[in-house]
Image (cartoon, helix red, strand yellow):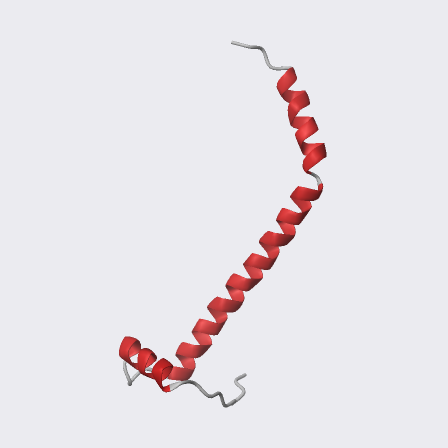
Length: 76
């Protein structure tokens, strides 16, 4: 389902869109695609930050386990 909305963009931005995609292209479709891409990137960034926070909160334990495992290796 599509909902009609109104936004105001600068002349410069509209000119840039038209130069890149031509006046025959649908601006609404272009803006929708750009927003979808932006939302996808922000969602990934948020998920990555959450994962990093989890790893950082467990870093001491994980490092101790790694050191323990490495202590069992035979030196070549």
